[in-house]
Image (cartoon, rainbow, N blue to C red; front, side, top):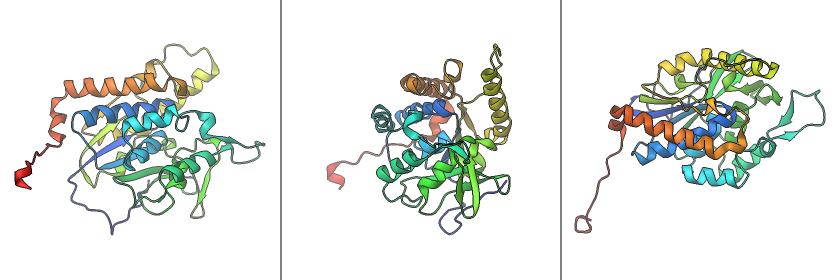
Length: 285
């Protein structure tokens, strides 16, 4: 494993609040509901790390988009349908059957500066370097769109991204909960894992075997990151939906919101992370 950091711009005081967002395809839309609940309870992370869909949602949140604004992007067909984020190639003889052209365009349209440094919150994106067979964390430079797309490049489905003379694919392949990417900067990390381990109910179809096999691998490579989180929220949308249930975005959002809200009620110590509002009267100004 390898972590790449910009040591000149980052503090090592470990006093920040971080959030780690797992990958999970459509299930990752639950992250938006979790952010909504955290904000309603006064909890605002300053450091974000994510893989795959967690990297996409995390990047827009780091850019300053509110949960409500992200939901509107979904309603506008900009952030959820696979067919909207994929441009199919005419042949299987490439590194993937689709490209991230529309995702590149969306990020450059909504985040014009296209740089990590221009984001309002610090964002860390987990990718997998196929040349070294290691996961890496990217968090600096003016290729934000490319690194986010690389983090969401599901092998075989999306083409790999060639950057810095190496080929990169989905961060969830080797680290679906990359909390290691922010542990040296954060005193507390809130983890959100939308692919919690579930016992298979029935595996009649080959696609069922594939889905549960991939989830088993992701759960195993998530263990270290999960253990680094002081608080771990596990939206249960996976019990009703799957990684391709993009049309159920509102239900998945609600799962994230409800799970986070219930978790906060059951773990009131998390409220110690809430920011205190300071009221200043006009006379004091």
